[in-house]
Length: 275
Image 1: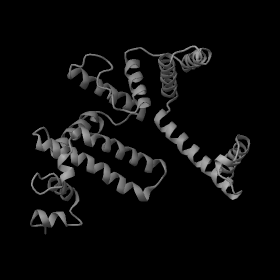
Image 2 (image 1 turned 90 degrees about the vertical axis):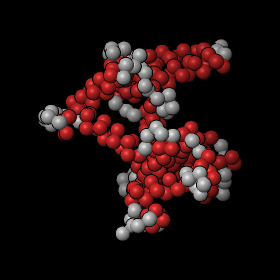
Image 3 (image 1 turned 60 degrees about the vertical axis):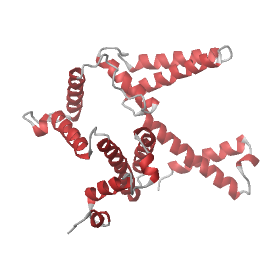
Image 4 (image 1 turned 30 degrees about the horizontal axis):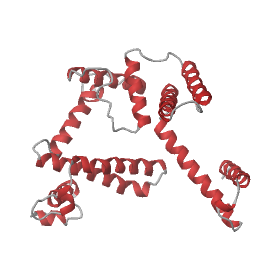
């Protein structure tokens, strides 16, 4: 049985209370870690984002042996923010947990209330958005786009902004119109690229990316996940090109585009072969 904070810190089965105590000790102004004591919400936020991506990366790669550790690292970030909140008298871990519990209960009346569970996942998603909209109205937000976090990855934020606008009727009615817009934006960028200032080029390229994010939304594709997948595919195939060149006694800079392109196509074919 755990009798003291020291016993808890060294208890391998201490669970969440152990982690909370470890963080409290790390932040102790007299006996804690100097680095941890110096941190604040702003300095820790980038680590929180990084750890969330590490979780997503492990899932993307199917690295289930790594996922437990990555989830622990992400949980540590929540505990860190909660400890700083407690020190500032803003909130603590229990209030954070209670707030999200209240939210989950309120947003699932078909599980925790009197509503029927006899509805599809799509119907539940629509109900979820309806409840969230009512919550935002209760907070007296000024506009449909208010509350979409500015720190989100740009593609993810673009989709969220577009979804919010679509809820009030500001949306292309069909995917074909979105495709037409992409063709229009790409054409403008291609035709005028030599005439545009760097700032104008920047603006036009941003418009094209925003239109592509809109297409992803209409197709039901997560553009951030799709780009991560494309990045992983590119990395995997380029590594195959490097390995093939190494077998020939070469480095990429000693090759040429024709040779590397042929090896790239070979890597693509190899991925499509049945196992």
